[in-house]
Amino acid sequence: MESWDLIIIGAGAAGLVAGIYGVRSGLKTLIIEEKIAGGTTAEAPLVQNYLGFQSIVGNELAQKMVDHAKSAGVSINEFEKVTGLDLNGEKKTVKTQKATYEAGAVIIASGSRYRELGVPGEKEFRGRGVSYCGLCDGPLFRNKRVLVVGGGNSALITAFYLAGIAPEVKIAHRRDAFRAEEALVRDLKGKPNTEILLSTEVKEIRGEKAVNKVILLDKKTGETRELAVNGVFVQVGESPNSEVAKDAGVAVDENGNIIVDALQHTNIAGVYAAGDVANHPVKQVGTAVGQGITAAVEAYGFIRRPYYKQ
Image (cartoon, rainbow, N blue to C red):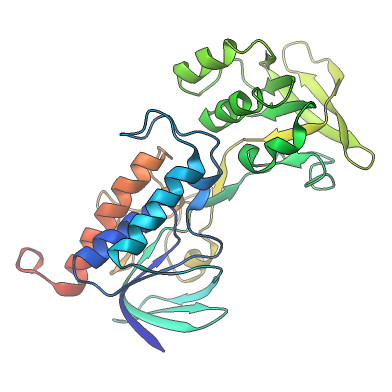
């Protein structure tokens, strides 16, 4: 069993900055990441609200964060899925499909996954016209018609990005107003090849070998209609990756977010949560970084017991 001072689950913005602060505090620190380091930041077409970068491609920002963490001396195990946790003892045990580790403290920064619409045709056409990542799949829809579904920042950023690739972009939101930043709404309205469909809900995705149409419901009139599209980009939020933590006794709220206090403490001593998996109401790169820093500082205090923590 490998022994570490601090183990961080997840290598997104929160996990990476926690790793940097852990190492700089003198803690032997390991980050375990199920996929590739960088988190969902890497899938953002553009990031325009992170301090110091007026506009930067998400993948570029994520790579800068990964490089920073590695240069600081953080060990990052990629493509290693955490399968179980034992958090109640003085030493915390983290089990993966490759190994078993122990640590004095654990920070859960496992992020979130894309939420689905839950409509007929969505699962059937996933990868055949249904996508959850504009940056990943947008280039496949050059010279094609696409529909973005959602009303938050991610949806509008995705629509704006796709408008530079596809000749016709529509964005459907089930409410009568976007919840995204006004600056994004203004920028999107300035794109001549985009159309906004408010109070509009996707009821079904249809096609043959690939998507060729959607069925839309006008929530004000109650009427349905067909819309010919080649791609549907779903941007309706995320669900927290908290199942393993919940199974280990970490308290979560009704939405599955890990419950933390102002210092990122969970209900188990020596266990912290940060980023999109936590119940912080604002899910942004900036807030994830702040939470990751706080969690790492608190973990250091728990492990080393400095005078101000005694």
